[in-house]
Image (tube, rainbow, N blue to C red):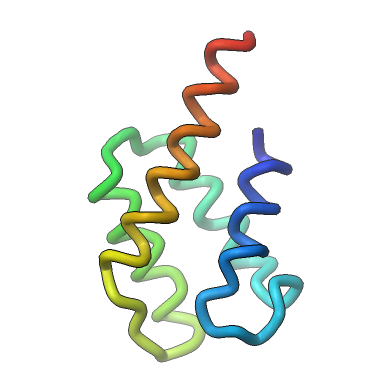
Length: 81
């Protein structure tokens, strides 16, 4: 699940700088994905993580959209296990 989530986040590339430049942010988001189940809570964490590093705001609705994709991966992985 972690690898798939990382690929989703790399493809998301919210600042259009290249998905391979978000290593630490991706790891932080994946850590939050393991503890959060609410899309809004995860979206707020995603927004905060990226904004802290890049000092640029991402609209919350963009973060909510990616949080739903990540949570779908999480629940899919739970069903497989």
